[in-house]
Length: 413
Figure 1 (cartoon, rainbow, N blue to C red):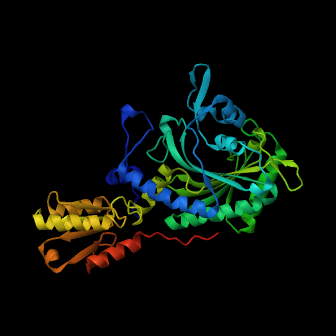
Figure 2 (cartoon, helix red, strand yellow):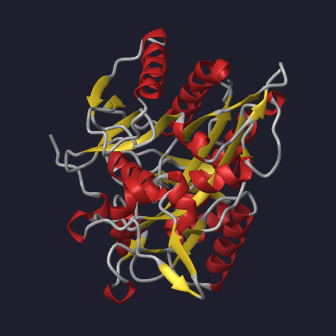
Figure 3 (cartoon, helix red, strand yellow):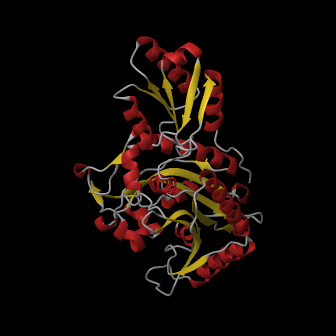
């Protein structure tokens, strides 16, 4: 079996990020090609979030120490947090998680049961001080962007909401065709220094998640002692190129945090009740997700995600050939396609670069193409023996690429 390339090697070929000593350890500088991929994923997710009823919010990357004392992060998670920032009698922290901020949004006004479930989402920039020995490219940096979801729900609707969220995550991941290794069910153990000590809450939360797994006939492994400090979780995990198991998507049940923030809603009997909080992320962090995508595809990303989708290679730099190539490029760009004209060095060198950078398609434009107005489209994703060379018109080219760029829109809940 051929050994898989690590995402760090692939990212170098695709020019996704760079690490500079002057910038600090574990702080990748994300390059234009990375941003293209991230923006494509983000646009896709936003469409799905709207369908599912999420409302997008933006919260600060800093919070007061008091905020993280209330949430419990200082008590249970401080070793992963950056040191306190003190000025003018204010003590601030770079946030390791977004849930405390979303609790404050919930708290801004009184809530009725009719407003629940309240589904909030955010592309959150988070900061966690990973040990220098544990840092690994995009997979484990010290700052990252999380596709973060928090759902505030009444207890009687909790199971239904968890099932819907599981389907939501599964359908999103199916579009990317990522191969999951396993689903883990992380529970608490008797180390009460690590977890909040309310045994009844733990029992309720774990029973509900286990019932859902059984009702949906999902195979899973149980991992005692791997729960978050506030509750049990389900993680969809994949295998990285180095054989390590990495969490991709997560869904976590939290009875504790709403109590800590004194969150309430008025039920249909006009009584005050405390909601349950679901922490959920369908792809985890964008950095890690893109790293795993690169490894599983070995850089041959789906057409709609490829930073450069088509290169136009000119035979020479004659004025007419360049003019035609640039006009064709503009025509394709207007169709929201990412197209570049390459006219540097030899044609052989450029074709080699096309394969190294995993560009899905290329065209070669010369006098014959100008004369016939027919273009030879080369599919670089196929092996040389079976390589698909299509001679087509401009209109056929535009229609083909436009259709391929339209990702799977079939998404029902």
